[in-house]
Length: 329
Ligand SMILES: NC(=O)c1ccc[n+]([C@@H]2O[C@H](COP(=O)([O-])OP(=O)(O)OC[C@H]3O[C@@H](n4cnc5c(N)ncnc54)[C@H](O)[C@@H]3O)[C@@H](O)[C@H]2O)c1
Image (cartoon, rainbow, N blue to C red; front, side, top):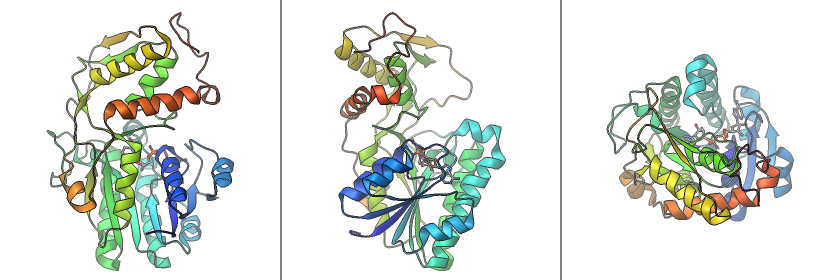
């Protein structure tokens, strides 16, 4: 699709910002529905960039009807996005990820919008032996995983009943520029580094994760928007396991290059419930979406690090250190 109008729900968040920038660059019109609850950029900045921003909530059906009116496709990102809050308040998680998704799909169906890409997560499969793939029996172990599974199921249901092309993508651990608000391990290590704080690793550090650079994720999301059918689920990951210790060493190296000081890695006892091994099998994404994660972890981390260094002042990271080792250059 080129020169189309695309709605991004949650488009002011970490992934949404990168997505709207790419869509604008490639000649699309972009509309955003976001309630500002966890926005990483302001509505004014997005508007200045050329986005039509609607401040509203996916739990409000009329806001969804208004937002989808006249669009060619929807990328549905707005959600309750973390495991822990979903355990603490599962009913809110259900309202956002269940009812919110149902509202978006119902609004699309009513308005004749057929193409929907819904952000899901590997949390739907629960505690499994990797590589994670689409044929694994879903067995979520958190309300977040359960409601993402529900959202996937609604995509399938609406595709079956109404002929929509609604597909779900299970994102791996996404990292990259503009992730200042994220609590994920890459953003946390970088923020800790800027504060001159040790990088804390729980357990031995050999636990693996699948880190996917944001630009690669966006390639996959946009390819999914073109899919000629609906009801499918595809995992988007790099397919390459990296250990948390390797990640910490890479951040240590970037920090040393930046200011010449050593950053401490602090090993703490493993936390209960920590997943040991986690990475994705990218075969289906490659076969169906022609997807390939092109960005090597070192390159992606460097780009992410550089974004943080360039934006230190506006991010309020400078001077947050309580450590003598902190670099604020
Ligand atoms: N970042 C990751 O590593 C990752 C991994 C797996 C899945 N996902 C999924 O990708 C999607 C986007 O994640 P992100 O990292 O950009 O999250 P984010 O929190 O940075 O962005 C979410 C955006 O949605 C908005 N929002 C929240 N509730 C809303 C509501 N009720 N109505 C309207 N807007 C609302 C927030 O203000 C925010 O701008 C989410 O669905 C998340 O579950 C992300």
